[in-house]
Image (cartoon, rainbow, N blue to C red; front, side, top):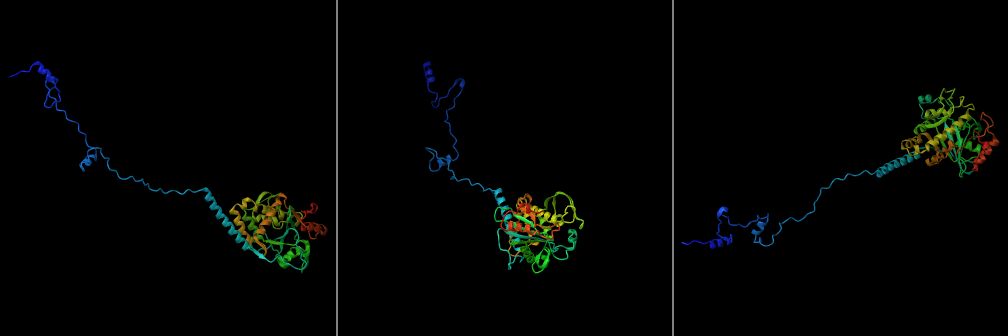
Length: 392
């Protein structure tokens, strides 16, 4: 039996504690044998080691599907309404409507063979001459309309208004000259008589020839409007603004046109241009023709204004009213009428000379031959009408 000495015990203490089989004692109790730390395999790596022994060395990255670009669902793109395209579409529609209305009016105008050649006809001279006639035709008016408009009984178809419009070729002002309806002239083939009766005796051709022979002016174009057509045209543009200085009461028809700066309807305008038996028209027909020229100027000015030309709700009705309202020569076209209206718009600002054929008396039944000839010569040569010859 042997005992270890102190040296042996010290040697035991100095021995490494990691030796296998060594167990510590004392108060610390037994020490467990040190176990190496094991790492949990990452997903996919264990299977890689198991497959073909490829687990050693550098670990392979997990397999990933090939990259594909993300495809997003297509969105339904809302079509933007561009103001420019909308306005252009509206403009084209209006332009087509205007062209269609223009063609319709041009081919639908009533035409008559009014201007004819004959032996002794005045030669062509400077400028362009229109004969404008307002007939008292009741065509298109039923008995109720005739009573409403106070047309009365004319005892035959006559020219209620006769005017010559001269459009110069130079920068001279245009002229609108009234021919009094009671003026006595030589009527070809019918002797002497009131100029308005030439219309009832031979229609438009006889009236044109009568005016040509009396004035020496060659008539190039002819335009005629009846009572119903006059009312329709005025109403088509929404009425005509006119300043009336004093109340006008016709003692024969009982109709009154009130004073003021007013917009006349077609019915009121018709009463205004036909009135000659009132305190406001002491010269009878001479005052009436002066009122007629004023109204034509206001009508032309409004018809040619941007408020009418650029407004399809007024322009198209105006063009549509034309075929039933106007009768022109068989050689006249719509653009001739447009030029006439454009020239007459200057009456309201004195850009157009308005006058009456010089007469010898207030009765307007005889022409002042000397003064009248001076006026006709000025128009024939595109010269300004002398101020002393301008007769209202």
